[in-house]
Image: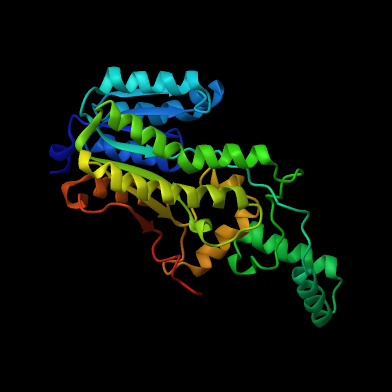
Length: 316
């Protein structure tokens, strides 16, 4: 049934070579949609890592067009947009997905806070009658090597903060690419008549849109801009038949996620907190987006859709 509904339409996915974008491309190809992907990766990575995934998409009997370009530059953006006009054509883009992860994850100021972790390690060492360094090493070994997720509050992260602090250029770049670039693409697709009669436009956010994570300030600011963009699109593109929404995924083990400082600790905390005690998978998000592309998702517009197994609402 879903293949009949989506067969012959196109999905345009920016950031479709890994994570949520790639998983969504695979799922929609299985449903009969042609796929056009804009991404930026090293050529060696494309050949050794990404190409097998692209081959998997083509094996579904659909068209796959890919552009390995810099989506920050006008030449790269223009190349992708012209390809959409040429390959998909008028009224054939049923899904536009913005899944570009290009945020600067840097601290605002030098970190300064009570050493709760050090105090806990010291107290535990005293109770055990052991040197604090030995207890610290044991905690890190149990956490990183044995999967003792409950020790996330005491373990040291293997993903440190950047050496440099957040600068104005970092903010401008992050808020542009992850905040309102989604709106600009959606507008142009609409203006050129490329969207299907009931097109879906989707972008990605995280719990960091409301919860302050150290080193995530620029990205968090971008996500709030993204939410405002989504609402504007939902209102102004509705007369053209388009629906706009944002998917808030739970903590997911993706290349983009693993660039966030302390993400190894965040993954462990999520596994402990999530009602299902596992991370969100890219395929969970892909299934949700596929469902929202079907006729039953036509009345969802201008909102955030959580796809996290209940992670965001779980207090323990």
